[in-house]
Amino acid sequence: MRAAVRHSAAGASAAALLLTTLAAAPAGSATGGPGAAGPPSRPAAELRGTAVAAARAGAAGIEFGRCSEAQDMPGSMQCGTVTVPLDYARPDGRKIRLTVSRVRATQRDPLNSKRKVPRQGALVFNPGGPGSSGFYFPLMGLMPEWKRLAAAYDLVGYAPRGVGRSAPLSCQDPKRYFKGPSPAPTHPSESYKRERIARARAYARGCAERNGSALRHYHSLNNARDLDVLRAALGESRLTFMGASYGTYFGALYAAMFPSHVRRMVFDSPVNPDPERIWYRNNLAQSAAFEDRWTDFREWIARHDNVYGLGNTAAKVLRSYERARARLSAEPAGGEVGPGQLQGAFLQAGYYDDFWPLRAEALSAYLEGDPQLLVDVAGPVREAAAEAENSAAVYSAVECNDAPWPRDWRVWDRDNTRLARAAPFETWDNVWANLPCAYWPAPPQRVLDVRTGPGELPPLLILSAERDAAAPYEGALELHRRLAGSVLVTERDAGSHGVAGGPNRCVNAYLEAYLLEGRTPGRRAACAGRAEPVPSPSE
Image 1 (cartoon, helix red, strand yellow):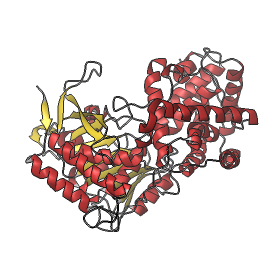
Image 2: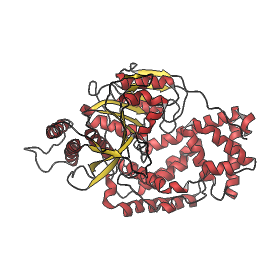
Image 3: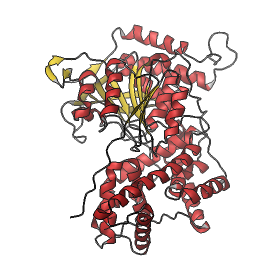
């Protein structure tokens, strides 16, 4: 049986929503209303287009039904789509559909199954990226840490524009995405730099050729507008949202653009929203922060030298790692894992310390003569090539479209050569991931200055780990300063990227108190970091 989420009195709701959104236009913005001189500005047209699209989505709702067999979802999960304009300045033009997933609130207290809890509406989640999908988020309700939230909220996930089945982007043939073993020089030669410049130019050109004029419409401002259309389609007058990593950026844009539509928002591991940092300087800061996390990881390995035998100091562990790099450069493991793949696997350990034991074990086994575990950990998963290529294409489109990037290679070369002297681990790999933005064919968007005054928003919750490398802690401090009335909870001496609903009970208590009761601890609070991972000895 197919169910639909709809507004009551859909026609009246649509008209009210249109008037409310137009009334929320920033002071001094062009509205193009009666008496306006000349055609409306593009921001005003996009504002009106968002109101029109939200009104239509509110009237139509989302027809949730069984997920397709290909998605192989549990019966409790329902799937549907919401229609949004490709270009919000032209709401009657080309449309795209975003895939949406939902698990209804159980309304049963996990501590007392006989006690029914009140439903609080929909909790919408985005995991970041750009390029990641939140489609499977509703299944988190099966985890013990999420059961209380799943009792009160419909858990809603979706694939943002460009991702997965939501008008997917592609910049190259997925069959060519995994290119086999690759180098990862920490101090690249001039000839290698020229090779990577040529590849970046070709990649940007491929994005333009494969997507045409639509490419320019994949950016964070439109992701925020899409979120408001999704809110309306779900029948929610105000949004309850949790964003992680990049999801905090367009979530913050949403809060600044649609403050009257905000109910509760959680920003988990936020990126720095300062317009001067989007995105070039944020990537420089990220490279510097990963050097510290790489040191954390090596120090942990050194403390467990009796297990891994990679050295009893961080410096000795680094020598073991460099020895593996040299050996992989001469002969890739399994014909597929070179220094680049090794670096990628160990970069993942900078995101999540749960990854530390397996990667340390793989490095140890490889240096002892058994490469198989390293191949399993670091080798390409070719079955996922299309998904990986799509994610990379969306990442490039959003970050390149969002803001101006240096167009002169000499700027990149100067800044990163200097940075790599102190932070060699990720610096150049980060450059190659973002260099297509130097040659991007679409014009950049205006960068919104995220800033709200007292009383403009309800309290918002910010969660951050103090040693997060993917989204350095200074970003959480900056977001906290910019969103008046926000509350910052810090996980001390911890560095995993994403802290909500994880193993830290203190963090989860603040999260539940906020989402279930609207309670916050004041301006700031802190939680002790989680326990270090337990080493896993090789068998």
